[in-house]
Length: 338
Image (cartoon, rainbow, N blue to C red; front, side, top):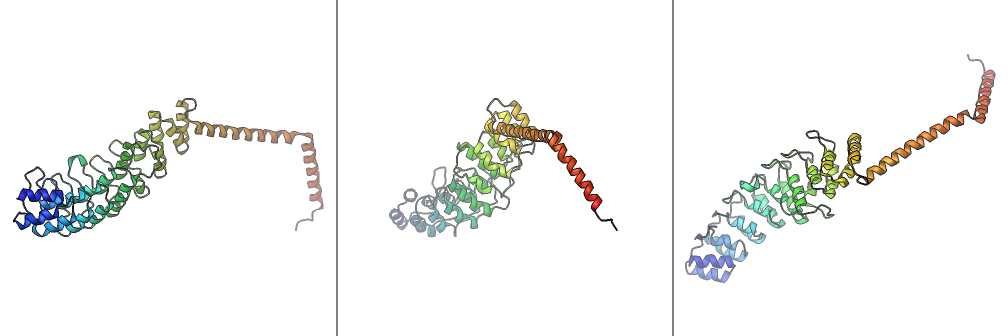
């Protein structure tokens, strides 16, 4: 009978649950499968009505392989079930892998689930799951799909997180994780807002990971000009690590559109050196700048030369002589100084 109750909860069948409870089925019974879940855990994934039926006779703090009923509701993105469960469950509890319910919600797509869990949770707690590399919920969200919904989730978590520049076990910040996720989803030239953009201006974009790269450097490595443009206003592109700055890395990668874009923001020495290595037509913007600069110098030289020639002309010399005589005459007529 207990197995039938577990099945009814998993299917979200409130009538069957009522019937089985009346017949004496135990809501505290644990499934024999690897998840070691109770009927309340299963119900949390499907139905608030079933959750409310089982709560009075269940252990809401039961913690199996995949966690408490809160973990099940968060993973299934069921905010209505979370609302019913939060007052009775321990939001700080971790599943057997070392994650809290908030961490599960952070990896999902329900803004409301995250909003409900934040007040009851510790947003600064770090995951103990090996593959999560000691990330907090905010970092996990930034590692999620890079779209606008996750951006909204990340905003909620950012407001609840003390150190937005915190690093995970690989030395990566949330910004680095967000940029890398955007690159993984091939948003190289996307005009759509990426989740990491909400961090720009709020975090230090000049921080470097274990490889010595900034978030912008990673975008350069992937030839992602659109992301380089987004990150540049917040990054010191002239800063060097092991003798290399952003334009040096772009030259190494042979990504000439990025090199051409970075040239005006880099040192003149670096920009000119890159231009010497570029092929014909690889850096059209910088070539146009150099041409304009050369033209300006030519105009200045011609103007200067013409000025000298005009000063030597007979008319100019005659005017100079007249001016000199006029000046001498005015001095003779001027009253004696006291």
